[in-house]
Image 1 (spheres, each protein chain N blue to C red):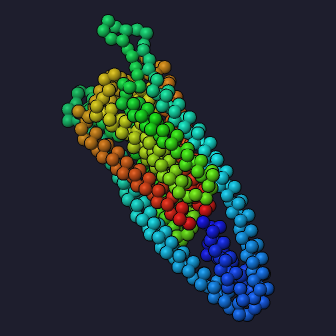
Image 2: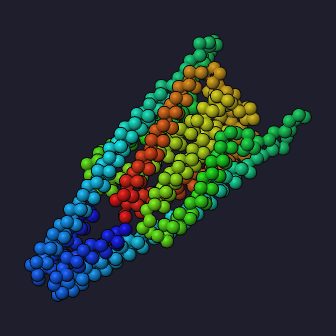
Image 3: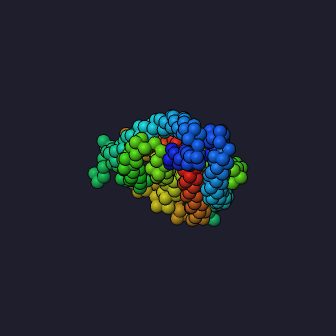
Length: 213
Length: 213
């Protein structure tokens, strides 16, 4: 956009000075110099933007890894205790707790979005001045971050309760028995928070890149 | 920034064509026309940006209201049951549940930030082209949104448990007894989610305003 504008201005200058061949030559030289210096400036800025877009792509890949790790760890979390009664075996699965089910679902959705957002990130690398894809990314990254943070912190609240219980509400800690279950669900929560932090960085990166248009 | 740049370009044009008085006059007229049309364009854009900044300010005030409502409702949530034993009276307070304490704390912090961010929003109204305050707002709004979403969803997980219980983990529903406690904490959670949605809109608004520089 910007380089087109400066080209237009140069053309106007040349038309205005066409009565005098000498000054026309000078004006062309001046305008060309102006365009060249502006082009160098734009190239430098373009390089910076390209670097930011590549960093965005790499960070996005890391966030996908973290999000998928959170989904798969939580999705495969289950534990059976080695002792059982005649009618009942003690068994814990992520599916037993609604919040953990929401956690798996939300992280899956966010990871899916992140995979689908990769082409937009590539467009930002190829065309560093395109603001449309960046705006798209910043908006949907915010939504994805909200989703992941919601899932992770809801699961944290339940995991905290499972570890410590709550005597006032008469909720007992279950992690004394189900240690493996609690450990693997905690790992999933940590992975999810890592994905959320990466998404926060992605939002900041996009905002900075949008600013320097 | 942009208007300064175009002024500079106009000066260069005039210097280049100073050999011929006629063409100089024409060049000045051309350059002035260019500057005027660009100024009109900038004015239109400035008006749009000013409108966006005013909307940002209003939305921020609403978010502050919602955040403070969430903090105060949750902070004053308590209930004593009308029956009691010789040694013990049944009493529920937000302070009994760690997640609700975090909820109050996080919403208070986020509301405090929102109040402190008002001057930056005013700067955006006064100077529609300043990108610094907008960038500042977009970054800290994202952090505040993450904080509020985390608080609201963690509290939701606990409130859900309080309403429905979990038979697998042997956690009983407590809302059968503490109806008022559960109702007012749920209202606080709703207010908090409203604040979070407003912050999401604020982020999107800042991103769109940053794009149209």
